[in-house]
Image (cartoon, rainbow, N blue to C red; front, top):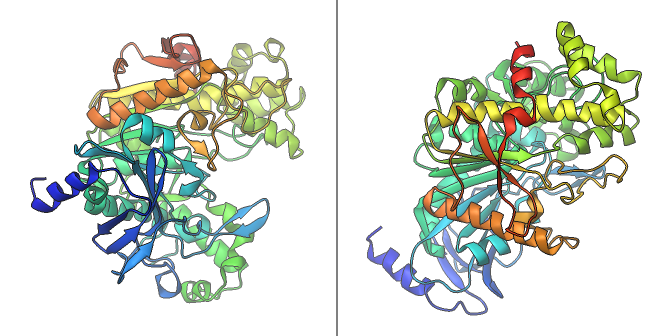
Length: 514
């Protein structure tokens, strides 16, 4: 921290950035672009292309390059399906850095964003952190990591099985530590944050021995380690198996072997055979690798949910929370796909999920109390699959480290799933993202003035937490009282205390979940 090089970088960082700023990384020089209040460095390679013999190997540090590399456009997204069409490329291990255009000379907090998408879709550059950076005075790094079969395939005897995407995230964190100072950032003050699969990855990283020394703070959005979609609460089909964010290594390897068999690979020759297959061959099976991040592995020795319960996680400050109506988009989407929750289906779902406790669940969530059976089932899923596991995880963490718990409760939050008003949409999954990011480069166009005030308040919370570990004006979560903050638009910016355990009937669910 006291080196002449860092001092020089901080002095340079206090100057106004010219139109084509150049910084020197440990792997070579890059040229970014000034963009109003921020400066952007896009498409920076942090690891070698994971292709050929490097497909299904842990990431290898990027080779140095000569001259000045162009960093004005994002790199390719990782291979995935979008609207049924293959996009992206295997050569996708890039980060994007956004920094304030004018700095004071003080080393800035660094925030590393892990995108969501069920471990099978998404890319870092879709999340424009301009407002976080300009209003909050932080540096934000957005990360691409391998997805689907390329990020989470496992096979017997294959080192890294089920954790290649997680290994990419760790490599991106190592890259950040080495290069933060080049952008005016503090390598000793790195906050990892993510939503959905990115939140689940963030939570998993807190339990990984390999993350020690890489993470100073964490923000988990809709991604608690203890999330548990009991039968039918993710896809409303009675008898569906329970889904969790992580699986045992054996389950992951069984998925890999089954995929190899479908692709015609001979027993005992699966790895060589799969490496010879083009990326397109995996697309029909890519969804099988959603929620296939494997534990019982070197990077995740224990189930992250168990690690939280037993105290086996990094003792760093944590913001943790989600949205009030997480499940509504999923349940509505299932209905649109031909799986509607009807009055006849509702009790079957309850019995399929809760067995001997079904009668108690039906008394607690009678369909007559809701606008539709689908909304009743979405509320069951909100409470049992999302909110209460998050509360339980917050209590486990708060016994050992500072936790700041929240819930976005804006009834008119961005309707990302385009749910019609008669459902109603509520604060659905991912509804918190437009308050923090301009998605795909555009701010949310329908925000009211009160919602913009809430967005500014949330940015203030997230960035003050990144700076100090204590979001300004936000009391720490007490595991005895369970008090969190509810985020909703108001003249004051939107914050009030709320007992999430009571609001989502977590006492009831703790009794019927054994």
